Image 1: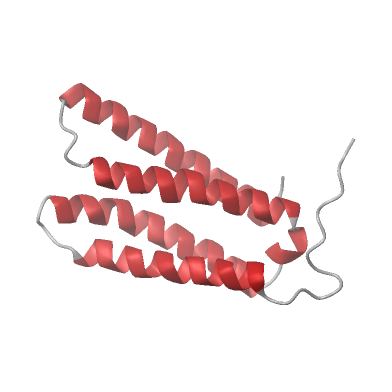
Image 2: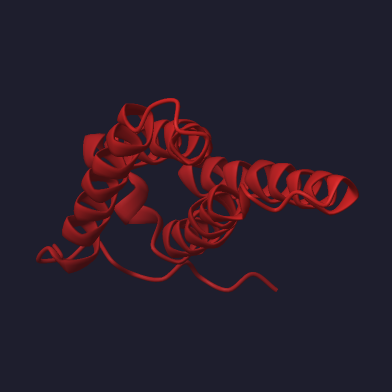
Length: 132
C-alpha cells in the first residue's frame, strides 16, 4: 500500500491507538462522560479512514489529483477538530470546535462521494492488479 491509501491507513491506525488509550483512561478513571467523543474518534478516525484507505488501494487512479488530496486534508482536519470539539461541548466550554469539525467532515464525505460516484474515464476506476 502506497500513496494516499497508506496516508489514510496511517491516519486510521493513529486514531485507533488514540481511541484505545482514551478508552483505557476512561475505564481506569471510571469517568465515561466523554464516550461520545471517543466513539466519534473511533468511527471517523479508525473505521472511515480504513475504508477510505482500502478504496484508494483498490482504485489507485481515484487517488490521483487534487480532489483526493482535498479529501485527505478535510478528513484530517475534521478528525483533529471533531473529537476534541465534542469533548469541549460535553464539558460545556464551547460547541464551535465540534461544529466546525462536523461541517468539515460533511465536506470530506461530499468530496469522497463525488470521487466514488463521478463518471469514470476509461483509464480510471480499475482495481489494482493482484500481486502474487
